[in-house]
Image (cartoon, rainbow, N blue to C red; front, side, top):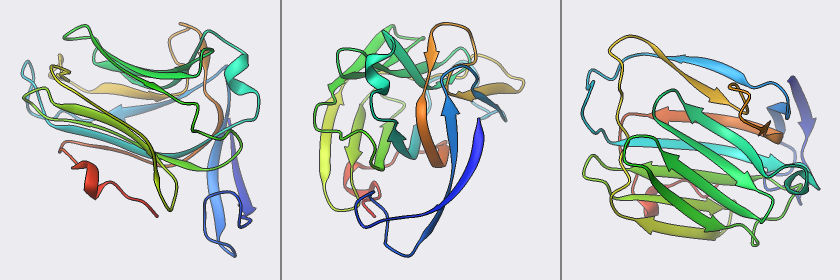
Length: 186
């Protein structure tokens, strides 16, 4: 993992003349982030994950599963060699699955994965101008199973496969639901 700063171009999904700082993950090691308690141990919660990401060109062909992020005892989200993006809920054993053929490797895209305590959840990929992929599902729950601190991981932290290959910036995990029309498109 390395921290990069680069001037953008008009073609990579950010404003021209903007300097972008981001993490470049190399597939082998992820970044472990401590997460405080939500105060809602043992019950479903509203939640949102958001980030800008840029898949390295050719990254999807390198592994059956390429882990983007996971929450300990909660969920994991990953890309597959068959150009799918999936999030598995460890609580309800439910999956959100979307086709990623509209996602261009090597360019910045914005990801929002969000859900409610009642189980309605969605995945949305967008550029700074338009929505590329959207999928809404029911009965996809997220629950904190520990009362003490737990951890989030960007990339691969559990030796389950390959971690994310590319850049990540502006990662956010929130204890609230973000409506699809409110997910950032800039």
